[in-house]
Amino acid sequence: MEYGAWAPHYEELRRAFGFPFEREEASAEPLESLLPPRARTDPIPRLRARLAGRPAVVVGLAPSWGPPPLWRRPAGAEPPAVLAADGATATCLNAGIVPTVVVTDLDGPVASEVTANGRGSLVVVHAHGDNRSAIAEWVPQFPGELAGSWAGPPRGPLLNVGGFTDGDRAAFLAAHAGAREVLLWGFDFDRVDETDGPARARKLEKLAWARRFVDLLAREGGVPIRWWRLDGSVGPYGGNSSASTR
Image 1 (cartoon, helix red, strand yellow):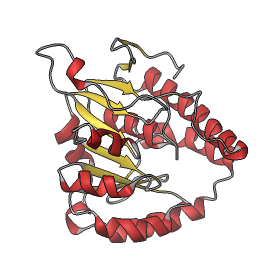
Image 2 (cartoon, one colour):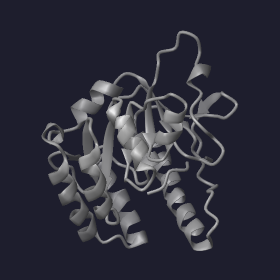
Image 3 (spheres, one colour):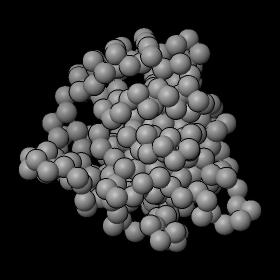
Image 4 (cartoon, one colour):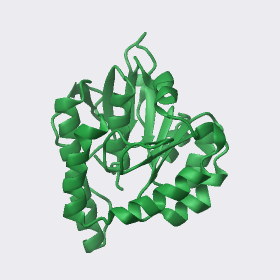
């Protein structure tokens, strides 16, 4: 999604959560400066080279889902690009799947994302108001191809094609980069494994916004969005299931 179409939706979310935009900028600046020279160009062409024209599986971290069963794809079907949302990277690697792209705000098991990056995954690091220290710690440790994103207008090497949580940002990214279709695996908007009351409520609130934004993508993104269900069936998206958090 182009930034001009996305910005009003993010502004509504920012007001609802009270995110100070100054803090977003304060994290974006060090991310931009820490990206290696080869990543300081417009990342969209590099992402299109990996995703355009392919089916894309976006892998979330919903409770009890595990890795996407790529072996259940129809015989002869084109191998999909796999986009792992943050903590789902470890789930993929444990199953022998190296994601095509990792989308992360660095609040999950980042060591697995560094490992995936070393094995060929392009990692899109997102800067937001709460992760400046993680950016400083982890970005220099990635050995492979990187890109950056943030909540403001695209600038230099930092993109913004829509989305809020790692999961829905990955779906927006796949659609924007020209994926033929987007299959959502490991998404559940209604369940989290957090037991602490306030933290659980906060996660569910974020997932409610993620559902809203995937609904938006399904309506206006120009790419078919589908559920890949636990029973192996694939069906049209209809917002009843995501589990990646900001």
